[in-house]
Length: 336
Ligand code: UDP
Ligand code: MG
Image 1 (spheres, rainbow, N blue to C red):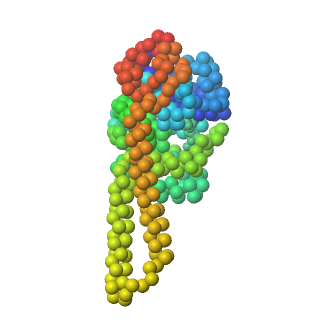
Image 2: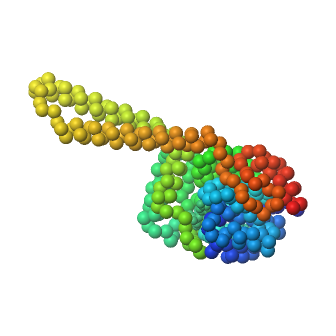
């Protein structure tokens, strides 16, 4: 019997969330369809997550697992799960139950209507700290000015995709994955379902302020070249100011005679120009680094273990995925 719904869950140090997750998912998913599977992706956890996944698989074979060789980050973990999902529809959600599985009951019918290829859940920010909410709002306002794809506040990775959208995502082989942008980039008709913000059930969040800041930069740089263009404009403006000032000094010297050269202006000019140059270099470097990462063509994740006996030990975006897509992987693991 073909799988109707796959649920991909990236797990990084989630020993505290797992028992409850398995319980809730079993209950919710069996109510939706008997033909579901859950793909738990251990993203190189340092706690007891992996042994727990083995146990979960033994007790409930519908829960499959993959284990990455180290911590590759949520983006890669999701990708690993997506590439191994066999279902017609694939849902992605967090392990900490911040993405309420009950919402699937609302989301699936929208996908089944055939009108939409993606159904995304949008959380409201009722319980969030005020500062964080304000910063997020500001960020998305700026982002949507800058970036070609439309990003929305509160819309995260919690979503259900049909096969067409999954296939599209898997063809995007970039190393720097800003999945929020990728989901938007592939397009297809998308429906939105709202839900109340829930706080984490157990364990701790892996986001620090610094990682959020870096994530913000990733978002801007992954999806457009405008910062490079802005560097040029910045250069033009600073040059114009410098030329204007030089002319003024020259005219002043001719009219009023040579005055004592200003020490303060010299220092200001040198430091300001130095600052501008460093910023521009940083922007260029940011893109250069990405080009470097992309040219290496490294796999986006490596598998060290999985619930399928004959699953490839290493998995990259490319041939193996096509094999899985075409169903070879499906048949083999079904027999196993
Ligand atoms: N996660 C992951 N790899 C990482 C960090 C996080 O797979 O390097 C998973 C984590 O286990 C969880 C999801 O990504 O299922 C979201 O993580 P978290 O709850 O820490 O983020 P938040 O909900 O605060 O955005
Ligand atoms: Mg969370």
